[in-house]
Length: 236
Image 1 (cartoon, rainbow, N blue to C red):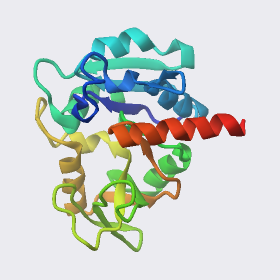
Image 2 (cartoon, rainbow, N blue to C red; image 1 turned 90 degrees about the vertical axis):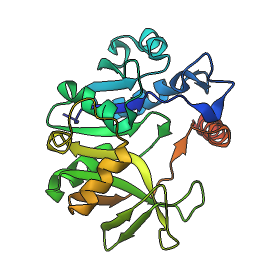
Image 3 (cartoon, rainbow, N blue to C red; image 1 turned 180 degrees about the horizontal axis):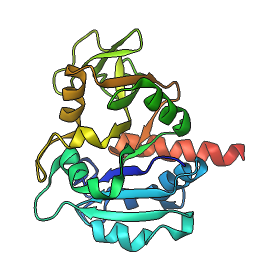
Image 4 (cartoon, rainbow, N blue to C red; image 1 turned 180 degrees about the vertical axis):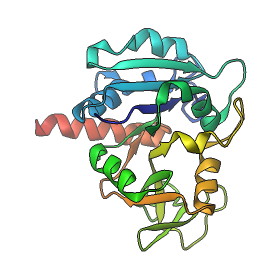
């Protein structure tokens, strides 16, 4: 059985305003349906049975649209940030009771057509507390932020990337719950900081994927995503 998947869908989506003033990014229509339904259908292909949605801004609309996940043969739970945003890492901390000992972490604006079961196996085989998928981006679709050599993540920095960083955080990770136990509940923290802590302890495995990522976090990304699905429909 595939590990549970935490989807981080609580952001304000400011780059997509005014489109996202009245609708969460997850519900933006792409190829005739809300974007998050494409994510769920992809996870369904790999036998995913449990999804935990970490939501915040307009999260009630996402819950109303998806329900309990029965349409996809899944069990979907919802964890709300509350009155203040907790950050992507803080949202995961709040979701811990629903995630179990090992779980995937997927950004809510990413469409990642990769082999989730192979990634799960790579995490188990690594013996590390976490695994991050990486893509050799070379600043092509977004700013590269990872120094990855000899199958190891040597440095990860989204805020101050250096010229020797050719890889990017692909948007999909796997974590052990032991990672989150090191942080107090209600900690406001970004997932990137948790990954950096793991890199410093040599507890973050890296796995390169060769299929490019798509995202709906920006107007340009949304346009590319729509083109991607339009091409897929023509090939069917």
